[in-house]
Amino acid sequence: MSYDHRRTRRLFTGLVAGLGIAASALADEPLKTCFLYSNPIGESGWTYQHELARKELVAAVGNKITTKFVENIAEGPDAERVIRNFVQEGCKVIFTPSFGFMEPTVKVARQAPNVIFLNGSGYKTASNLGVYNARYYEGRYLEGVLAGAMSKKGVVGYVGAFPIPEVLQGLNAFAQGMRSVNPNAQIKLIWVNAWYDPGKERDAASTLMKLGVDVMAYATSGVSIVTTAEEKGVYTLGYYSDVSKFGPKTNLTSIMHTWGPYYVKVIEDVLAGRWKSGNVVGGLREGMIRMAPLNAAVPADVRERFVRAERDLIEGKLHPFAGPVIDQDGKERVPAGKVLSVEELNSMNYLVQGIDGTVPKK
Image (cartoon, rainbow, N blue to C red; front, side, top):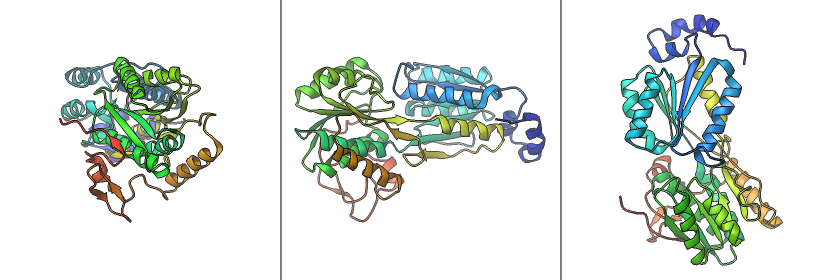
């Protein structure tokens, strides 16, 4: 990138006068950009994908920035401590990609107005705090199509992390996709109340297989479910990363999170003094999620159905929550001819028909 700090600063000085955020971004020294990760980076999963994006950012922007990351930090007071340390160490842009980091990020952002914060999967914004997320439920719908077509028993397992709207969106979209090809299929649901806990994930997978499922999906960040299912010959549908190397015979596909282009865009905007707070959401169309290649076990007719659904989602001809959407109690949540609104998606607190499980009470 042929960006020249000094020339840009002259061009934008008049525009950014009095705006501490932009002015700090135009300083001569490299922009210190810091990342807070909730899990170990590992070889796959949520944190791994963000770390890939950080590396992609460094490769794209070069010496215009320096980066730092801290991994495996619990959501809560410890996260606030690390975010404050970032500020004290001179970080000018701080990414906190976890829903559980939202409140500590908001708290520190109020006290550090000259620092830009980006919280992944949260929803609270401020003049120096933006949020970003993806329409993961689009990929979930496609995985549901595969589950419905590939399950011989019509009994599919699903391991939930926490019952927040984002996870419920994915679970419900999965059910909608599954029942679009197999209206009688059922999902056996287990919550593990963790984003990353290999032991709990392995136990949940074993329990689901004892209940007779022959396909499994999950919302956690480990690979225990994939490896456990591979040993038993049970199909899985991956999340966050392409996990085919952990289940070469049984993993049918994965939803891959691809944050790199977004991170590059954010930093380019900050360096140019044009960054503004907002809520950025992308899906298949924008490339924020992609589907990993289908396993050789997927037959041609199912592949064609999958590809057709993927194309329709990208082109806006298909929406996972187009009515009628009926919940577990038989209540119509979305009538025919309507689509669930963004506000309704963001407050989702119910399960749709076809799911054998409950939403835990807080």
